[in-house]
Length: 372
Image (tube, helix red, strand yellow):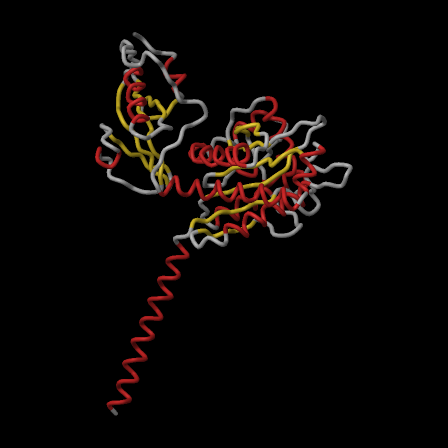
């Protein structure tokens, strides 16, 4: 009887340990960084194609599968695909897949085309600041909705040719633009510095594939398949592997930025001045300037000791991201001094932001009403 009791106790202990192990493994999976990889076009939508037989949908899929294969080797990542074979997926469903997965990133891979021998990579984030070239890209990518059944119902009268429609779809994702730009910059840097590819830079455009994705999102144009040399490179296994590796490494670097609580600059908002120290006060009534020093998934106490001794720290939560600021002043020149101080303390990408009546506004807009 005593022996039987011992067996029962051992069984219960082993069951308890197994349960804890399973629970721990489940939690570990839940903690993984979720990346949704989207191969552009597919099925009866070939995307861009050329007379030589190159099709965007095939190249994009091969690059995406290679990115996923590499990321899946890292236990900290979970990869979800919008498609893994040559099938048509609506733009609306691509976003739905990402949102359902509660993804941390949405990365859409495409190839470019032009009637000239244009070349180079571009990485797009969602936004309303469309140049003529960006508008043409947005129009070309968005017109795929006409290949979908019931597109009038699904897209509520959206017209890819309408600037007003394209501006409107950028608004909902605006909260994630800053984080998207961090990733976009890392991707383009990998292309240009590591692979020595020509980079055409980061662009903003109103792209439906990123509309309603509630996480940082980018659309990568890996190059022009209409360019003879670039098309050959993108269609080669070597080229696809190199592009995929660069994108994979950029994604990992982006995650490290969040984990390490490092800030990032936003599209030319850095303002340097050799006369910052001696500048007279430049007061802007009704406007508060702050210096954003970091954006992270980690919640830290807004205390000086957490931010290398910088003073007047504040914190704002936007969705799942915490933004950290130094300073609180109506003096724009003081804000520039604070920015310089932040950079000298290691926050090299610190930038100035402006608030009016509690709402964030462009710094350039704030300065229009400046009075000395």
